[in-house]
Every structure is written in C-alpha cells, then in structure tokens.
Image 1 (cartoon, rainbow, N blue to C red):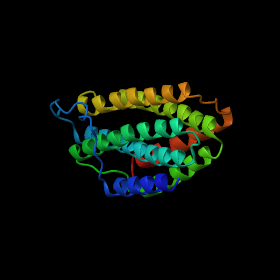
Image 2 (cartoon, one colour):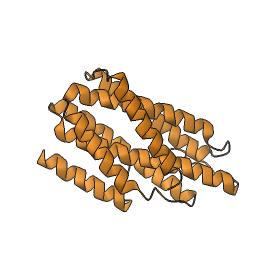
Image 3 (cartoon, rainbow, N blue to C red):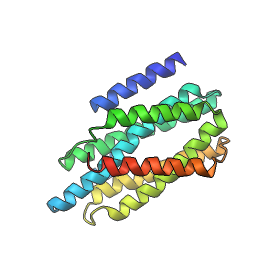
Image 4 (cartoon, rainbow, N blue to C red):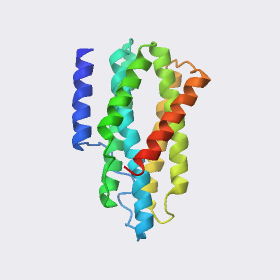
Length: 206
C-alpha cells in the first residue's frame, strides 16, 4: 500500500505540474490544423479542457482504487488503465496548447476530490471497485461521444483524440466487467452522473 501511495503522489505532482508522457503518438498529429473562428477555437478548447479534467479525475480515481485493491490482478488492471489515462492527459494537454488555451485552474481540487471518491469505492471491495470503473467508463464513453458531435466540424485534430480516448475508455470498462465487476445501485449511478455534470459545467469555463 505504501508503494501505491508513493506512485499516486508522484502522479499527482506530475499532473499538477503539467508533466505527462505517452508511449503512443497523439491521435491526429499528422492532420493539418484547420482554420477555426475565434468562437470555434474557444468552444473546442472548452471541450478539450473538460476532457483534460476528466483525465485528471481518472488518474486520481485509479491511484486511489489501486491503493485499496485486494487482489494483485485487480491492481494490475488499475495500473494498466492508469498508464493509458496518462497518455490521454498528455494528448489533451497538447491539444489545449495548440488551441492556445490552458487546463482547468481547479485541477488540484478535482484531483483531491476524485482521490477521495476512489478511496471510498475501494473500501467496498474489489468487485464494487471494478463496478465503479465500469459505470465511470460507461458515462465517460457517452460524454466523449457527445463531444465528438459538439466539436467544430473542421476540428479534425481534436476529434481524432476524442475518438481514440473513447475507444480506450470502452476497453477499460469491458476489462473491469470481465474481471468480475458487480453492478452498482441505481441511486449511486445517478449521483456519479450529477457529479460529472457539475465538473463538466465548471471545467468548460474555469
């Protein structure tokens, strides 16, 4: 557990400092930057800031859940998913820079809150822990699909990133389900959705 806390703390520091690295190339990196109006650029940046914040939250959730995971195979699931989520973090950070914008100013707060939620999920045991992953990734997949529809039509670079992220999130959820996830209660799913809606509303602007 001590090692997991150290890894989680290191990841938090790198996230707050904006230092992330990915083994995979950024999706859409070979595409030309399309001309966007100032309004389109602000809108695309707002959506990508939300996606970046979502990845900050994912890092915190997986780090906290790994701390309390009982079985080694479940810890490995979280570690593998966290590595890919860190790539998503790097991709969205890069795209925000290209759009001339910045991540959410509240990222340290988002990270702390998500870490606390991850610990609460982990206390329920591995099957509930995995169930939380399944529901989180299902909701994230839905929201990324919506973002693909809301992005400016000409912004193929952002769309390529979001599409690849969506594919990865769906795979994370499927892996958690196959690992023995239990279904979460409907009221908890509703609370998770409301919390995510609040995050999206604020992170789009701040």
